Length: 245
Image 1: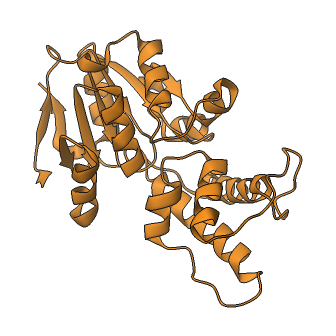
Image 2 (image 1 turned 180 degrees about the horizontal axis):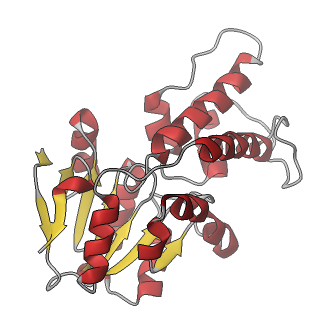
């Protein structure tokens, strides 16, 4: 299921697009923790027993999506309705915007403490640039720029399309492929001559819809199997097993 080694060919590829969280950096776990803290506190404050936010909930409803869309999808799965709210809502407001802000504040606090790149990320990005292959990061996170700068990976990235761009351009969340299409448009590369690395099921589905020449999942075990089921051509455990040759 998971490939022990993968070589990318400069002759076949003009560009590679990367998701950020869980692919280039370890912030996927950071985001999952922040979502759990946010949702469990919200659910606990409501009357009656509750089922806490789980890893399955994270992968099914929020991973790869913009914050507001993640809040909406998770609450719908629990049959909970709250107002949409406004951009001025404080983080303790029981609205979509309030919960989104509460989660973002939790992420920002963790980013101040820790943000590191995952194994193989810097080496692969460096090799791609050396080979003349374009590099883009396409992430639903509005914190993508700060994370790339904190890890030093920003110096290898030519194009970044993130949650800030998504809001400004009104791009729908994954599995809609709009985020990836915008990255390819800025790179001026046709999908068939590009590859995508994604760890989210919604992201793999989006990559397949775009028509990337190669859709590569990043994951292990049962999650690797789920990525293949979602449309990944292959799966690697992490970027340390990928080179350019």
